[in-house]
Structures are given as structure tokens and as C-alpha cells.
Amino acid sequence: MAEIIELKNVYFSAQDRDVVQDISLEFEEGKITAIIGPSGSGKSTVLKISAGLLVPNDGEVFYRGRNIAHMSHSENLEFRRESAFVFQDSALWANQNLDQILELPLKIHYPQMTRSQRMKRIKEVTIEADYRKDLGIRPSRLSMGEQKLIAFARAMLCNPKLLFLDEWVESLDETSANKLIEVVKRKKKEGASVIFVCHDMRIIRDLADSVVVIVDGKEAFEGTKEDLLNSPELSNFLKMEIAV
Ligand SMILES: Nc1ncnc2c1ncn2[C@@H]1O[C@H](COP(=O)(O)OP(=O)(O)OP(=O)(O)O)[C@@H](O)[C@H]1O
Ligand SMILES: [Mg+2]
Image (cartoon, rainbow, N blue to C red; front, side, top):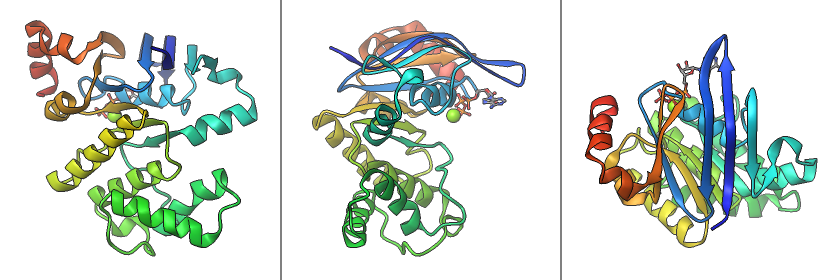
């Protein structure tokens, strides 16, 4: 099967600190991959590098075989439209109302859409993400969990083929978390590829096809979920390191 994202010998350092060191990964098209590891091990950094949101100091990142550092403007726009990212801290614009935040990706990627078409799509994705409150308010009036629901809804707007989810259900109650998990399962059935960071082994068991373990900015394990679960050594390590 083809790789949708490939990292080749990627390094990232910031403020004289090596955050990611020599990581090479292949994410298969149509599969769900979980990235796990202790706090501060570099999971979010690897996810952002994979999505082209952070530029590595060394190494290469490929999207469908194309080096993302050498993409043309139109190729890059296509990559942006086909992929979506739910940030660990939700990253909603503080000075915009929720409906304005949700309109922006549609305005960029579907400039021909009318306002009423945009509003219809926004309604669909917010219902799907289980957010039912007012959209005419600023993110500061939402709980962390509600901000996550809006961040998830925003990620779904353009019907992505590739989803990056960073600790996307951690601050949610079980009902909302289960709804989002069902959406991700449906996306997989539709052929989407998903890469997610999560600390919850129950969700990893339920969703992931393969697992990557990152420790101290280095790849400690890459394999199928079954490989991980069948290795007592790794399971013990994970229990001790990240209390999964
Ligand atoms: N731009 C940066 N400048 C300085 N340090 C950074 C930067 N980005 C990441 N780091 C450091 O690199 C380490 C890894 O960060 P990262 O956010 O990728 O970890 P993580 O595995 O996602 O952690 P968590 O489980 O807490 O979300 C952290 O110690 C962080 O402080
Ligand atoms: Mg993180």
C-alpha cells in the first residue's frame, strides 16, 4: 500500500535543544496510526512536521511521494485542503467569533461558496462534532472541551482525506469523545488516513491500525497495534512511562 506521508531522517531542534532526532516514518494511506510516548517526548512536534506545519532542521517530508518543501503554491494549497489538523490546544482565533473561525477555511478553499452554503456546512460539522451552543461567541467563552469540539468541526469542514489529531479527545466527556471516535471511524471507511496522538490505550486499541512510540525525540517502536500489544516488554514500558 502507498504511503500518504513519509518522514526521512527528520531532525528538529529549538533553542539549542534537540526535540526530534533522526526520525523516519511511513504512514500508510487509508490507515489509522497512533503516536504515543511520555509527556514532552516530541509527539506534537512530529505531528506538526508530518503535516508540514513545522519545517525540520534536517531531513525530508513527503506527501503522496512529493517533497513538501518543494511543492508549488497550487500543490501546497491542495495539500492544505486535503489535510486538516486538530491542535492540542485547539488554536482557535481569540478575536473572532466561532462562526467566523469556521467560515475561514471554506472562504479560502471554496471561494465560490455563498454565505448560506457556508453556514449550512458549518451547521453540519458542528452537529457532527456534538457542539450545539451559540456560534456567535468568542472561544474564550467555551470550556477546553467545547473548544476541542469546535477545533474538530473546523478540521472536518473541507472533508479532509488526511487527518492529524493531537490529543483530540483528552478533555472531553465520554459521550462527546465517543461521537468524535465514530466520526473518525466513518472517515476511515470513506478512505481517509488518520494520524493521532493519544494517551488512552482504550482508544488506541479501538482505532489504531499501527502505532509509533516516541521517547526523548527518537523513534522507540513502529509496528502494528498487535505487535505492540503482544510485546510484554513494550506494554510494561508504556505502563511505566505513560501510564496507559
Ligand atoms: N519551539 C520550541 N522551542 C523550545 N522547545 C520546544 C519547542 N517545541 C518543542 N519544544 C520542546 O520539545 C519537547 C517536545 O515537545 P512536544 O510538544 O512535541 O512534546 P509532546 O510529546 O507533544 O508532549 P505532551 O505529551 O506534553 O503534549 C518539549 O520539552 C518542548 O518544551
Ligand atoms: Mg503534545
